Image (cartoon, rainbow, N blue to C red):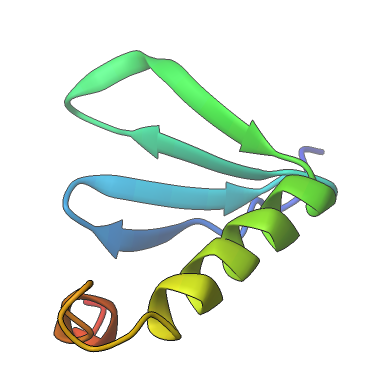
Length: 71
């Protein structure tokens, strides 16, 4: 039996799933061949990048882009 993948729609056509180690991003229905598998260290780096964006001085980045609700 195949283990559950915990699929979730993130928005903008991007889906995420979890295979037990990687968070896998894909564009179902738009591109069936491209998948990005983020290992834990890369996921942490992505979260740190978002944090750096949130801490930028006003005017350098539009904070509301990060605060938009996810569907």
